[in-house]
Image (cartoon, rainbow, N blue to C red; front, side, top):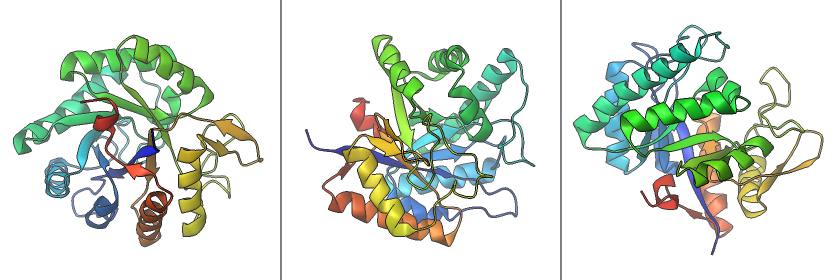
Length: 261
């Protein structure tokens, strides 16, 4: 079997009169979209617009719920109870599901956002509780999480339970030796060189791993690559990644084809 990967991007992050991201451009280079649900970014008008954009470009849609933190863009940890967390995720996914149903599009996946995403990497029991609740409410959807040593093992457990868990990697982000994302405040956390980012993307998929900031090799089982579209540099990087990955003989397909949805 040849190499296959999904390419996703966080989208629909504008709010009212405030424009964030270049969704109309980046959507040309992805197969899956993570749509903000109103808690860390977006609003009902933006959500509907983003769903229609996905339909127009045949891009699969997913919910991107985060902490209720518009001011901090969901990048700050919030000490919520388990019930509050589960209910807030259900609330946000349900909001997006309404717009998806309105446009006749299925919910492909759920990917947590920002600080909530990072927190769940090391909170296996809580993460599985959220997954179970979402499945009861919305059916058999795919869940995205960061590909690390821990989540590689978690994916095997989920498969035995019939849970579809996809592991994600970030070509434009540096990693710690533990396989987690290097915090953004670190000067080497985010890469800017388009060619380097594109080459890392292909290497991640073909060699099934990534080199940490200190040069350590970390094995990963990568299903999807996350790219960003919040500035024009990111758009150029998206073009480079898409072109280079295909040039390396890697097929780009949406996540649903991996899990036969």
